[in-house]
Length: 450
Image 1 (tube, helix red, strand yellow):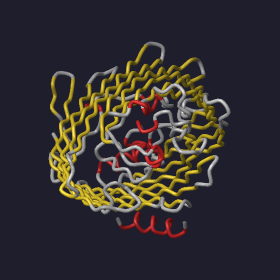
Image 2 (spheres, helix red, strand yellow):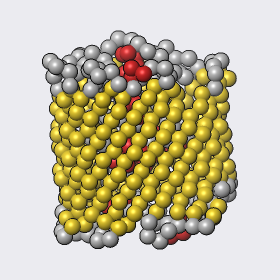
Image 3 (tube, rainbow, N blue to C red):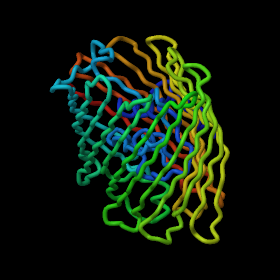
Image 4 (spheres, helix red, strand yellow):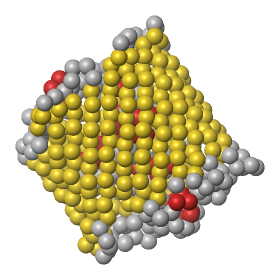
């Protein structure tokens, strides 16, 4: 383990990750309330979660984020957005194409990738790929409400090993409505389709990776009621596996948060959530419910420091008769610190208690994550990010350490053209023989944007 930590620090200090991965970690860590619960989304986790996922070694550059995350705790202040024209536009930021009260931001990225373990397997196989990807983001320029739409279509073309090209598609939407009496209603939905990544869970089932399709929809209501900040949220999702219907499942979530602002920037809160996972096979041992409760403090609208810290208890209760459940105490954090205009530092603690396809009752995962972004020049940015996770398989003797470290460099020639270079190192170290994996990946590409 000491060797793993040392190698992680070395990689973090001297290595570069595609901007999508770096941004993914930044978004996932800076979003309010890092998830601490039974993971009802499973393989449906979005790109931020993929980077922090228990599986490790996941390439998140091609997979947009599903909307399930929007159903998790988000404060009214953090959820509120303004139109693009009210935001500062830097000298190298894309201006978009205005159509009425909407701004369209198209982009095309052509990425070349070289890896020593294309499948993140115990015995690595070298791979060379080209990954073209088209993206379109649409933002409303309304004064009161806001609408965000995004879509992408990408492909992975293999030079080595010789394989059929893989494709991925994604669509997402989020509508924020500022209602009367300090009420904010957020509606969101998403669709993603991609090639499944290798994982411990997939290995446990003895099945091959296939295409997975995720549908999701959610709603969040934030309201100021006297001296209280109230939030109600709910979501539903469906995961479908091509040619393997026995693995299909649905997820449902209901949650609530009550905050009591002590100042205009500091709000202690209590949060609770219940979730349900239901497989197409009614007697699946992974069917069950999860209950999560937490108390914490949220800090918003601070010039240099914002985020939240919470602690609580999460419980997983399976449906199967005679199968014991599990509970876990957690302390989570999600913080963003900007000491000056050149540095942005993000850090987080996260705990998950998930069902599993292995012989274990459940898997408890504890993670520490961090990222640092430094603007060397106005058009040159370096981002270093990494996380260390500990996976405990309850009911089995298996214990895994999972490590990811990346360094990304983005150079903007102008508003419309960027050069991207990155290096990523992913590693899993298990006390079970034959379960260790290690993957190193180098990416170089160009991004054309408008």
